[in-house]
Length: 64
Image (cartoon, rainbow, N blue to C red; front, side):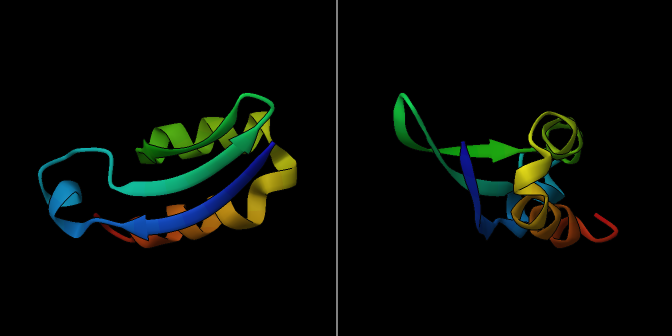
């Protein structure tokens, strides 16, 4: 599993949507996935080896 922070969409965050976009690479292929703060925190527990990139997404939320 490889997770890379790709982008943060402020407009989606303002609307309460999933605003952090990550590129996921795993045995099934490569795809993009939008995550909420809660999603990121759950994935930090499941994939601690990807903590650096997941924390970039969490930091992008700031006080949103």
